[in-house]
Length: 440
Image (cartoon, rainbow, N blue to C red; front, side, top):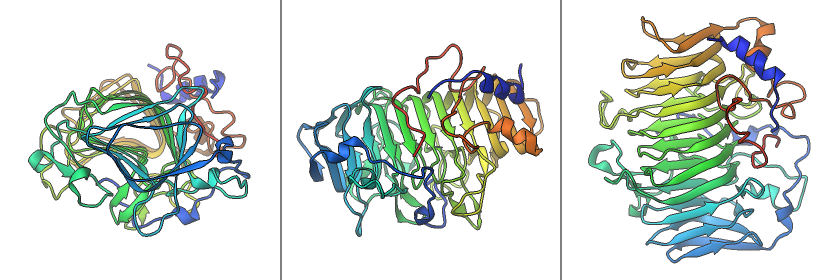
């Protein structure tokens, strides 16, 4: 079994083109954009159609308009929202309420089926204003929330989704693990996030009790104000996901999520903001909880949060955030009774790669994984963990081995994910081609 240093050397030789947040406050005003110039999308010349309120009849958003969401738009009452390939969606200017949030209610449906050549894009209004001098910042689009009827472990089996007002249409959870809310495919969500109150935020893509009948694949969430992807219970099993430079965690699991995610990238960026708790970083590559202490302080609610993660590349950076002066915290923080099955994956570029934080690893498993960190490869209870190779790289020269591209000169033009394990391998397709975006 190769260690991670060897794997990264392989990566350099073979190029391929290319409530859970605990933050103290909103750091988006300090966001340092990666690009020296921000060209608007060509769609900025299209006519704008404003949308607000609930969608209760079948509706289509076409690619001949830019669709501007005002407030919270909720698809419900059996309606289906169809979004055509190549469509761009933005938010109106935020005032006093969550703005630009698209919610698919547990009685609504989504048919957002983009293509590799024409993905659907939710993004900042500043990249659609026909003014190249304006740039995007986290929080300028609200986010996308899909609610379903699958099982969650919250008391009573139903729960209000975080970040939204206490109204019945924003509750999720039920008893149908095969629940189907539709299709969400070839989609980018950029500069999302909304802070309703401390610890209560809207993520880039939130999936609450979404069932296995729902199709989610080829989705990228970039530079959001909170988590990239957050899963609250449910059994949905997405594939081909990219989380880039989000403020808090790139992936977050809670309330009994038991789905399988295959082929995913969690990529940190030192130029983005980082969430802070008690004066220290609270940003992780992945954070996983069984439930919140207020629901059950023993973290024993069933079903247990237990994602199966196949072919993940979780990549951090020692570079401190421009906004907070802090780095990322853990590659994978498994806590509060959560469990995990991790297969064929890489975690690298964090001070600590993997930690069982106050929880037992007894029902977790690892197969053909490699973890590498700057200080401690992992914090594990005593024992042997078959299937996980741990290494550490503490010297400056080795830092380029564990973070070989993104925060170095010339990045992200030389992005390169190919390896013996992780999200892109010699036996996988070049699934990041065409539809993803890494330069902002």
